[in-house]
Amino acid sequence: MENVCEIHSYHRPRHLLTESHHVLPRAWQAVWQPMREERNVWYPKTIELCPTGHGGVHHILVEIMREYEAQPKHAIEEVRLQVAEAAVRARYRQHKEFPIACLAPRLWKSKGGLLDTLINRRQYGWGLSHRQFVDR
Ligand SMILES: [Zn+2]
Ligand SMILES: [Zn+2]
Image 1 (cartoon, helix red, strand yellow):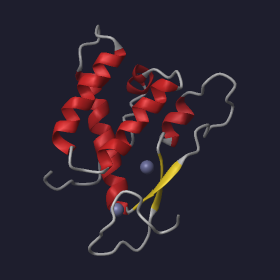
Image 2 (cartoon, rainbow, N blue to C red):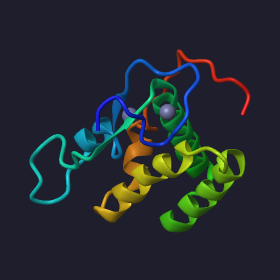
Image 3 (tube, rainbow, N blue to C red):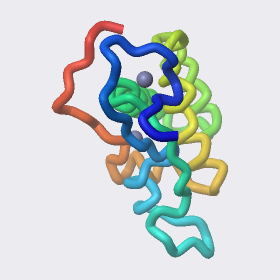
């Protein structure tokens, strides 16, 4: 679909464009590829989002990754991720951006990737550090 945000049915003001979001960020895909995958973008699925929704997905993804990083290193990865998801869900449970953000670390793990690989490479899911986010 073109020019239709896939997570919000209502926008005011109406967005003038959409952005294609890779549910598994391209930067992550470039960091590591599963066996037999030689393409830099080996998981091409995208969804269309309004610019606000797109920024929000990445903002929430960064929060999930930072919460993951903050968990005790000796805990197993799955537990660290579950705790991180729960912490961030508590802040964004009403936002449709949250489940989209959650797809990224879940897909990464399901394909055999290690979240610590991303942490070690400082790949939190696109910092967008130039953006100031309004109150949740
Ligand atoms: Zn994106
Ligand atoms: Zn939207």
